[in-house]
Image 1 (tube, rainbow, N blue to C red):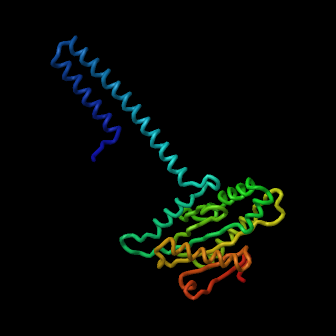
Image 2 (tube, rainbow, N blue to C red):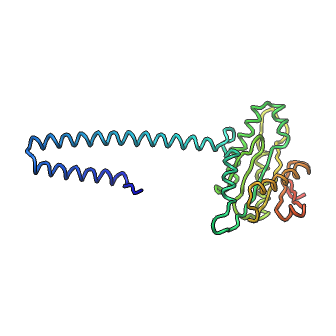
Image 3 (cartoon, rainbow, N blue to C red):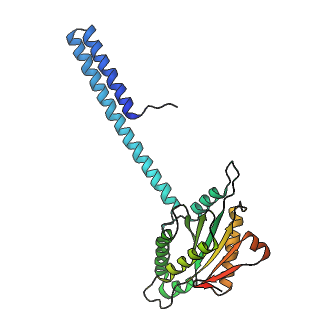
Length: 252
């Protein structure tokens, strides 16, 4: 459908109105011409008022719908993507385009070690505060192209877009460890730590569920080997059941 820009539509209306006034003055008597011109101007004025009102209401309705749509994608506690919005974005990236080019990426899953202790000792409000602080800090650690979300509970997920070296991934994991450990909650004497699982795909993984299982297995391994560490697992190492486990300060 062809739609003229608004300013061109107004310009055409003014041109036709000017032509109508000129023809009316040329072919009608003065009294009748003045009456017709007055009626025409009043009609156009009312039309502009009604059109402006409708456009204003439709724009407000669109803004409201957009706001609700954005809110439906955000996690209310951490103000990052919620589980469904994250999964939709991740699946959209992993779905190959017409060219069939591979989509290399890394899925990070991490959760807070002994999060139940925070809730039991300080209350659920303190736990919510902790999750909110993490949600505020996470986007600062990653690129705007990366996808950051809260999976649920004390579990967070990040999809790193594109190929990354192991050293870069190590640094990303250590930066998460540092940010988490720097959070202080009144009444909590121990340091807050987290365990991270990294599922690495060179582009051969096309399914989000498959990539998630890979990262989840890496997270489980990090938990089983002492917590407060990160584990990297790619498709090859998953087949060989060999993983790379590192503590926040280096390899172990």
